Image 1 (cartoon, rainbow, N blue to C red):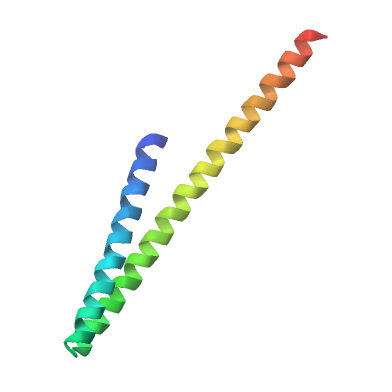
Image 2 (cartoon, one colour):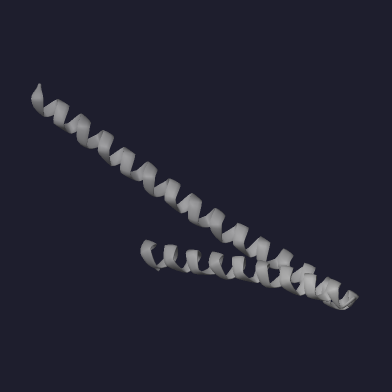
Length: 88
């Protein structure tokens, strides 16, 4: 999988994780309002699972962006060094 596709997949999965966190919170509140302990427990577990998925894929996306930025800075330093060498 190329970098662009992987970045798109990671961003999509992070968005899914975020939405499942909101769904879990909604189920938890609804269960609390209906006094359903099972619904509260399911909502809390769904919210936690969504949070963990969101955190994992956001972390992967951030690390990927850092690696890309470092590679670009390295290329720019090498290009600058080559230009300076050319002027000597």
